[in-house]
Image (cartoon, rainbow, N blue to C red; front, side):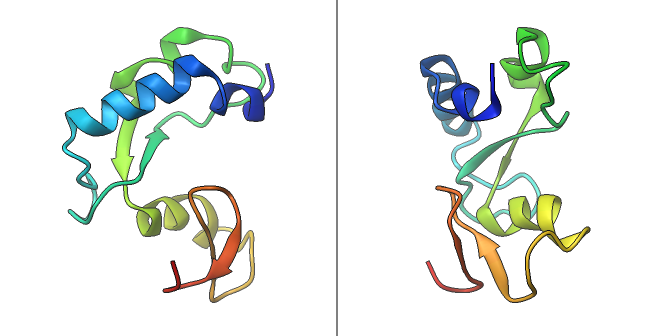
Length: 97
């Protein structure tokens, strides 16, 4: 299964929503409103089909968009400074919803 197919699957959407509700939609890092159920173990072709990793709530973290972008994109400079990814995966200027 590809990452796109996984994140569009009914199983992931249900788990993600239930997990965020269990955390009251509060970011576990900064306390702002959480929007993303983040995998603590990054998914890759070797583990994406392992439900013990991909669909395990113990392997998730509730994050706001800023903390999620910092986790994935600020360390390695994946996109230009001043830009960030939206929940939908689109690029936007930081600070603009």
